[in-house]
Image (cartoon, rainbow, N blue to C red; front, top):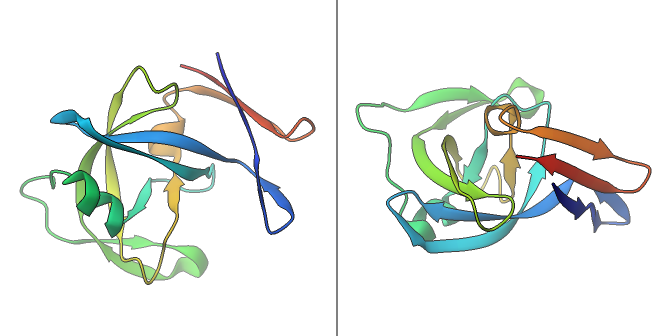
Length: 132
């Protein structure tokens, strides 16, 4: 079981936790970033700085796709493969969608990742409980 506190951002507590991200071909190439766990997002969205720093492999034979963001705004995106870890020990691979940094600076973890785990959002105690 992994327990992480909510982060206080602009005097609000939000379900944002530090996650370890890595290049799936080289786990030594990794970094830690706070990421918003968003049950309303179908997919995981990452800004370009993460793709660039980790030198993430793009999913082959994929053209740009269109994703809908906040207020159903359409954004062009490319797919990448990334490894991630909630406990900084065990890694899981997932496809993520690139969003230009002018649209998104933060990392949004969507249901394509969240649905692989049992995750409890404990708003009263301001914490997230993850059972891998």
